[in-house]
Length: 464
Image 1 (cartoon, rainbow, N blue to C red):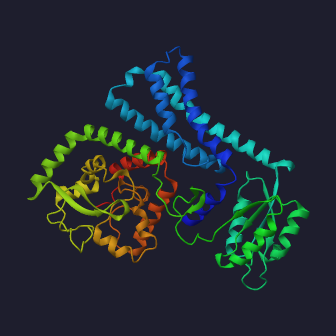
Image 2: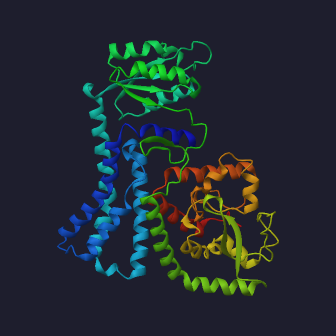
Image 3: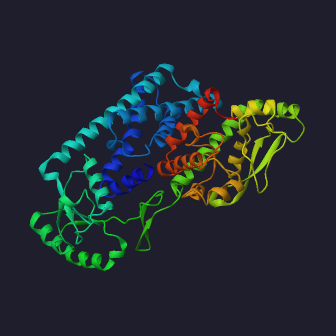
C-alpha cells in the first residue's frame, strides 16, 4: 500500500509541474486574501501585527501535496484538519507572546470560519476546471507503454486513475509473447519494439512510457534511436519500486541527471523550515510547561531513589548515536547491549512512573534534546541501540527511518503504534508509518501530528 502511493507520486510529478505550482500557492494566497478582506470589511487597520500574521500563515499553509488530485471529500477533511491544527498552534503562540489583543475577535472568528470553506471551494473549482480542460479533444494526448510486464500494468493503471492528466492509453508494445507478458496486458499488446516508431508516426502518439527491465539495455538503446526520430515525449520508468522510495526525484549534478531513490526530505528550504519550527515551538513549550517539569521532577524524586533524568542511548540522524533525556519511570533502567522493552504491569515501573508513562509526561525533557539539535518535535521515535541492531536485520528498510532526526512524537504513534512492539508485525507496521511520514512530510503534517498527540495524552490508555 505504501509503495503504491510512493509510485503514483513519483510517476505523476513530471508532466504536471504547472498544475502543482498553482495548487501549492492557491491555499496560502486564499488564506492571506481572506484575512485582508475580513480585516478591511470590519474597518480594522492593516497594521504591522496584521501583516506579520499574514506572512506567517502564508508560509505555514502550503499543502503537502497537489489537492487537485484528491477527491473532494478527502480534500475537505485534509483542509479542515490542517487548518484546525494551524489555528491551534497560532493560538498557543499568541497566548505565549501575549499578542492576541492586537486583533479584533470578530475579524479572527470570521477569518477562521471562512478560510477553510474558501480553500475547499477553490480546490473544487480547480479540479472541475482541470477535468474540463483535459476533456477537450485538443487537450487529450495518446500514450503507449513499451513493456507489457507488471510495471507496465502499474503505469497503465496510474494513467487511468488520473482523471485530470488528459491522457488516453491505447496499448502495449513488447517483443515477448510468452508468460512474461502480464495477463492484464496481453489483450492490449499492439506489436513489438520495432513497430513502435511507425505506430507513433501513423497514430500521432504524444507520450511513450518505457517500462522495460534494466537488463534490456541494448533493446532500450535501439528503441530510443528509433523513437527519437518522432515528436513523442519519452518517459523512462525504472523498475525500482520493489524498494522503499523516499523523496524520489530527478536531480541535476553538473549536467548529469541523477535519480534520487532514498533521500531525506529535509534539504535546502525544508531543512531550514523544519529547524526553525522546532526551535520556536520547543522554546515556547518549555516556557509554558516549566512549572509542570518542576512538579514531575519532584514526583520522580519522591517516588523512588535514583536520578530524576534517565539518559538513554539511541540512534539519531544517519544512525549516529545520541543521548536522549527522559524522566525516570522505573526503579531500574536497561541501557546496555540487551534492552528489555516495558510491558504491561512491568514490575520495574514505579506507581508515579506508570502515570507519567501513560500520559507521555516522561518524554517532556526531550524538548531540551530538540533545542540541542539531536531531535525534532515530530519524527520517527528513537529506539534503543540494541533494538536497532536486532530489527535492522529483520525488517526491510528499517534503517531508512534514520534519514531524519528522531522525534518526540511521530506519525506511527498517532496512528495507534505506541508502546510495546512485542512482535515483528507490530514493529513492521510502525516502520511503515515512519516511512510514510518521510514520503509525505510537510509543515502542516507536523502540526497535525502535534495536535493529535495532545489529544492522545489525555485520552489514550494503551501506553504503559
